[in-house]
Structures are given as C-alpha cells and as structure tokens.
Length: 170
Image 1: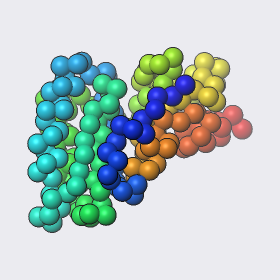
Image 2: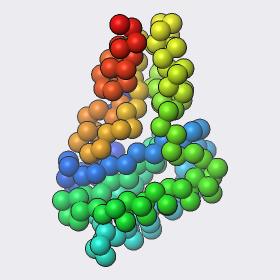
Image 3: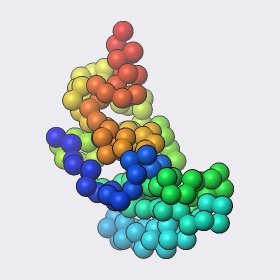
Image 4: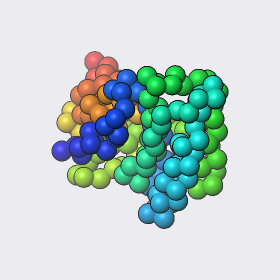
C-alpha cells in the first residue's frame, strides 16, 4: 500500500504549479531533515522570478526527498530562478554530503519503507521476480503538482519505469 501524499502539499496552489523533486542518494537523519527544513523556509520566502516574489513551497519528505513547488499561475518561473534553485540544492548537497542529482537511482516503496537501487539493479530485480507489477516506485519525473499528487508514488506497472521494464520482457 502506498502512502497518501495528497494532503502534504499546500492546498492553495494551482494544480498546474511546477514541481521539482530531488532524491537523496541515502536516507537523511532526523537532524539533517530538520536542518534542511530550516534552510528551505527563508530561501523559498526570498525566491524571485524577474524580481517578483515566487509563490513557493518546499518540504523534506520521508527523510529522502526535497520537494519544491512554484505556483506559476501567480508568477511564471524564469530560467534564472530555476538556476538559483539548482545552485541552492547543490549548496545543500555539499553541506550534507548528499547527491541530489543522481537520476539513475530509483526509490521503491516496499513494506512501508523506502529502498534506493540503481536502475540496472531494478531491472535485475524485475527479471528475477523480486519485484512485481504492484511494487510502488517514486516517479521523480512528474512536473506538476497535480501529477505529484496523483502519480508520484505508483505501481511499477504504470509510468515510464513500468514501460521500460515491460520492454525488457518482450
């Protein structure tokens, strides 16, 4: 059973809001999670696009993911504001010695816990029957708040990863 995340994001943001998901290469400690949350609040409050304040939100979830949301119906997010976000995430990663940018690491939700595996290992686990179509994974490629609420955590049989795994069976 996958965790219910729909209520975790702010309800006063457009469903079309842009979302960025950063996955840590390892679980964060409670102290690291609290430290990150303390860094996120002032950064989001100061986030700007073309000198206009971004209606933004950020959170650390499951001691594994950093989520940023910008309501682009209020202020469109520019290339410079996205660059600032990436630099901020890099600084946080450097401070905690965490890699937030390895997209070939896949997070699975199994038995109420998150486990991180390289994509090649996921493919091996699938081929050997260690994973089934109902095993859930975190699809960090979702780009809107609506997609995050509905399909961030989904069974392997759905989304891009399921398609990739099915193609290997053929």
